[in-house]
Image 1 (cartoon, rainbow, N blue to C red):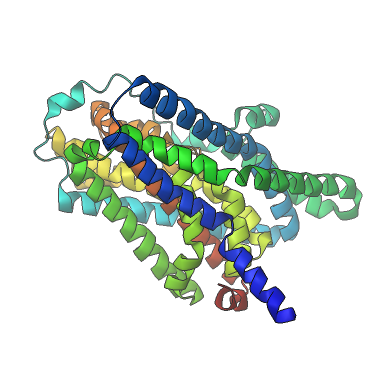
Image 2: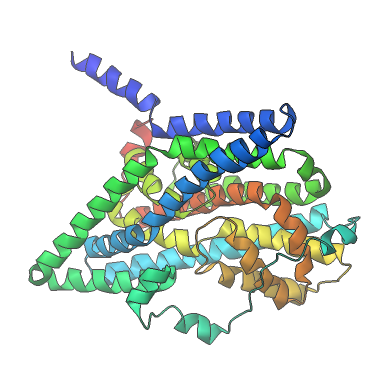
Length: 431
């Protein structure tokens, strides 16, 4: 009888949410390609199906996920820092996490610049096509280091929560968590409130996540129905360069670091974490994957939620390796397309600027294009080149989001191992 129950449980897991999301991803791609190539343009196809039903449901799902972001990150960080308890240990975990995130981002830009110079994506491009596409490019001025540091501290935390300024929200949440941990029983009521509110947000997240297969299907369908494959041809070299650099970072750099620091099997890790990567790919938002990442790392990898509830929301805000890779390749692409020579000092500037630009970047779709203007401005490249990149950014945005959240997970696993909060038995026993 007991064995029968275990078998039934395994069957249920096989058709779990992550599997449904992955199936929806594949079906959506197929449906989108069919719409693009096999069904002729008409009012029904373009206005009712693609820009009507698929757009409304897909964007509705993204909005539901965005609705969760601020309260979920705020509560999970308060509870995470409160659960770690010891201020000294919290500081150690925080510093290790921050150093790892910044180091991998700098590595990511270096990989991107190397791959970009190897493939030369901008050579032989017709620049007239780029110049006509630049009208919608948003610009972003670089801020000084002192302003960047000061902007982390909220002068009005309620305003930061309302406007979703994530770095300020994180700082405020960490301070509250540390104080609650220090006060102990004296602040038990407030601690219980945050703990229970965090449970409410997790429950709300799971409710919204149950709609994920439908949302994912609509998002992917519309992407392929709108873009198809023809839009990729003029920028094939650029896309190949970005995808190659992303693959090196995700399957090479991260997995080598995981093996060195934890001794875990990288292939097994990828296999266990792949459904989360597929979900991140479909939504193109790091924030949407926070609860799924925490749950997967806990149940399949053996990472304590005390660590992951702190490092994963933090990573969704400051760890944007995939975005930095796109920016590195885009710099090489733009420089070659416009015939501008970049010196070694320029490349070092790009590495520094792209690393700093990733800190505080919102984990929402296509935000990397806005911060890219800052990277371009740092070495005097014309922002007009972004106009052409925008056409195919959606697919690359989806891929780099999958890389971003994999970096968060690897960092979390390493930090958990260093703080004796990683149960390797769970990693090797569960499937």
